[in-house]
Amino acid sequence: MPTVTLIGTRLAEEGTEFVYQGESDACEGCPYRGQCLNLVVGRRYRVADVRENTQTLECAVHDAGVRAVEVEPASVTVNVPSKAAYAGSKASLAGSCPHVECPSHPYCEPDGAEFDREYRITEVHGDPPHDFCALDRELTQVEFEPDDG
Image (tube, rainbow, N blue to C red):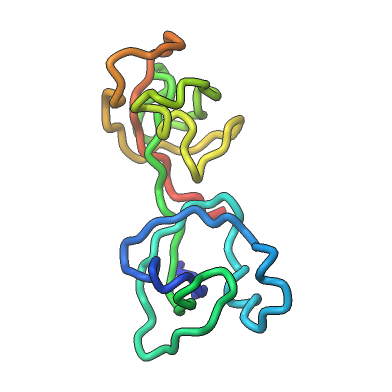
């Protein structure tokens, strides 16, 4: 079920995905706090709809103001150990990785998914984008279902 919230006008486009980072110091005293700060910190969201005929509101965080949108939890593309990579099963991330230059790093340490937590796999994509894993991990790229709980 979509949630109505306010986001920066530059992000207010259907299909845009973001990870909600929580309250900024600049939010203190804002009259719109209740409409902006109603998402779950660390969760990935997708803009499902931009509310038409709404005004752009001034914002101390977003230089071009904020707009009302409907958002819903979004899936997260990740790399998991291959032995656990089956659609419908649950899996966890393999663990942190210091190799930030690796093309798979954003999938091994993705925004919107936590270590030490299991997620249901909705789709198996296959081989990750790296040629070899510097940590000698056997990984498969999968899609975690949207986190709505």
